[in-house]
Length: 229
View 1 (cartoon, one colour):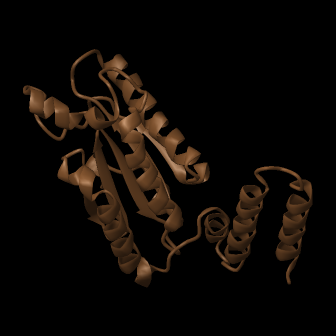
View 2 (cartoon, rainbow, N blue to C red):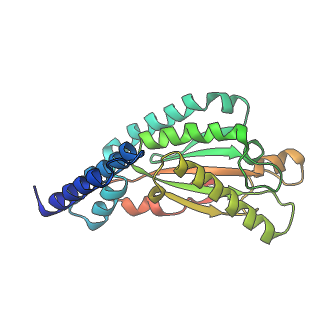
View 3 (cartoon, rainbow, N blue to C red):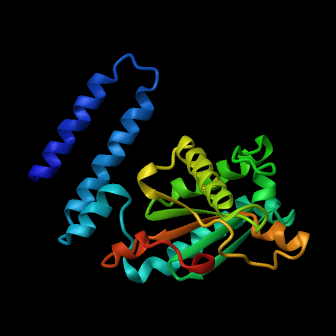
């Protein structure tokens, strides 16, 4: 056992002892165990960036990325089939290492609100469940609006909605270290704002899942380009 492993195992032991009598003992010990495992794996990667990502989320070998994302996309499609049927969201593969879940804001928020609707929360719970199963990724949550209102108002609203989604995901157990939030206001429409249907489509939150690829770890940190590319 190397020095890093000894330090981490000692930290886990301290966590176990300190959690005695704590009603959340099992959850805290589980989190500590995951951190130890991830850091030990990361310590075996010579690249400093690899070590960081190993400790936080892990990394996928390049040759395995396609299969890894195929499985994750398939599970998202299975879990969210009913929402997709109702046209509340869509799932698209943007690149070999990137999947985007495009969620209609109308399905998630009331007009001019950043409070997630009660009935929409279960959708995000399902997404969180899949994200926890595949932890080797950075998750970009990007809010968008239609063109109604001022630029300043729309920018703030898109940021608050992205933050609300991120908070729900972390509340469901997705590590906050994996999540990046951003609001883009009305700058990236997917349809014309001259029609009610176009505006409806433009009001959305994108969850862009970017796999951390071994040797290209920083790519996952880059904000997704237009429409999640």
